Length: 207
Image (tube, rainbow, N blue to C red; front, side, top):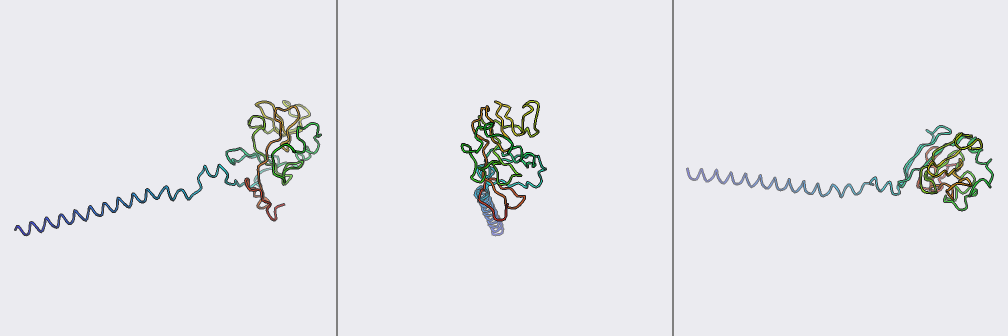
């Protein structure tokens, strides 16, 4: 009887040791998994990384003529306007003496936007949506002759904070607190409708 009891005790001890060993291995495995989770997550681009410089893409074909949309790039609002032919023509009609920097010599833009329309394509205006005075967000006032801006208003942007005015190319009007034109970020087109903000290398086949 003693031998049978001893055998039962040995079996019980063996079972307990197996259970403890299994539990320890399982716990260790979970620990390794928890340790690996942040390591594996670090391989994925974070929201912060994207905000600090990753390119932003947009299908501009969805914009109606005369419509504006905004996207975020490097924690900044970027205005994209699909200009009508009339909007483009309004830029050409403004006399140089009405503007502070008509040729954008003192303003910030890539070389391909250092022109009258300040764009790669006349149809699309792409500018940083911060007033170059103190950083407020100018409002779109695209309709010419709006009452609050005068009958001679050609259409453009108006900053409600301190009254700076910009034309449909983002050029600042004389008499505005802002000293330079709205900034143009680096951008390119991968095809006729896909706009990429943050990449300014010329793209083959994009007019």
